Length: 149
Image (cartoon, rainbow, N blue to C red; front, side, top):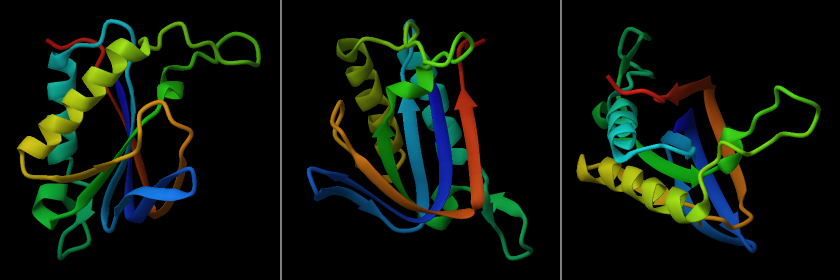
């Protein structure tokens, strides 16, 4: 499972020219589910997102979490995070989980974020989405957890 985290001042997602998710200051998350991913990995990554200290404190240091700042989350499913570009020029998606596996795990991940009190907006799974954002910094991180010890 991979989560691309972007610190944003705002973000929206549209489907068929209708806004289906919109946030102010917080995180835009792109979530990629791969074959073999588990709820244990989703738990780990949700906890990591909730506690990731990448907002500035009074001294200008990245020391505050999204929970500390009262920020919001826009979570978007993105199977292309599982893309393999190591061979040729066209990505392969052999490692991406099938939709019937990925969707429940994506929804479980979102539920874990909500359970710690975070406000979470989403796109629509498997839809063509247009995502707009203002990246704050820019500040972007990739979180992965393929093996939980």
